[in-house]
Length: 204
Image (cartoon, rainbow, N blue to C red):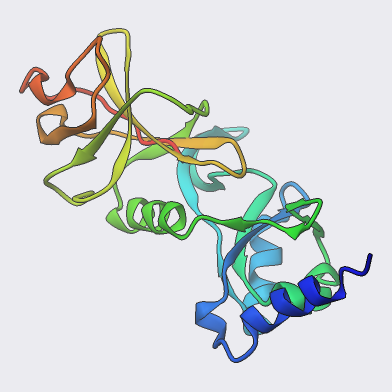
């Protein structure tokens, strides 16, 4: 049985779209070459997103704070999945994260959450992926409107935002008093958290 009609239907879905309306896709790239690949894609006219975070590294005579990829070995790019050869031919690109049916689009809301987190300039860091837990929303401050999963680590509360496709998360410090429940669990109602400043993390 021919699958051509299905493929034609999928191709038509992207025809006529402007580049800023194409889905986001995750690219696996050579480790430590993320920034170089991002620059090349930008030079080719692609909308790419390489989230970074600050990390302290020891040099021979000092400790220096540098930018590092939030998801080592990956970056995000908007493009037409039916015209992906230029992406794959870009030096440093290993593959497009895909399912059997083709490139797998990253949820737009997850990308927006990471972009908001990076733009806010608040300290953040990679965090183990969480798939379940109390879902909460930040109601004030530079991260207003972001939703994530709340967890507790050594008596401090952490908000975890996740990129499901990559099974990766990222953390950010927040005031737990600014958090309200979206879908609380039976075990704990995060809208009643202590109003004192707590550490929290947002996972992507």
